[in-house]
Length: 200
Image 1 (cartoon, rainbow, N blue to C red):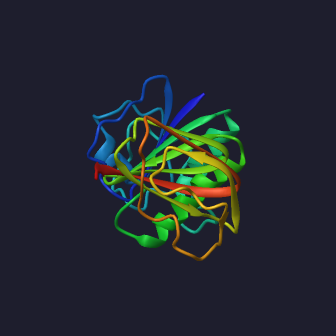
Image 2 (image 1 turned 120 degrees about the vertical axis):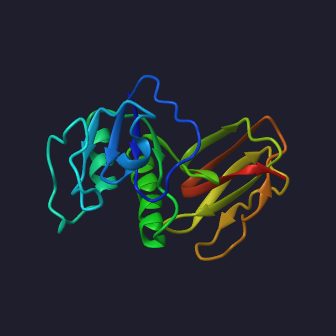
């Protein structure tokens, strides 16, 4: 199953591929998403909207709650069997929410789903085990550990070879370049992969 999660962090300007996907729209994301994509599920506490979206939400969550609207949507998607998740609108505005949205990628990866957050400036993945990146030749890519030290078992297709050991808290891995049509690596642990939309 493929799922799209639309967030309220930024008004996403690019194209949205919703083919074969269940689309979860969180709260204020409805303002930028309505009319651009067919929304299957509206959800959240709706503290960012002054009206009821269409389709009406099946459940309105309280404003004072443990999880963000984005995490509620992610949990629903994973529980429904989603194995591929694309998050739009997760960047911009509040940095604390942006960091929280990176944790959504981490949570999806730890549960075996391939997830990517598409912002107006980059595509961001959380990778564990084998990761394959296609169609990014010439783009600036950063690979950074997330959640602790990680080990790269093998890698190819990068201008700077990925280090065998990534120490959590260091900046090695920032601003690499993809040099092949297919780049890949295998990692023990979890890394974030940032693919900038601009070519070098």
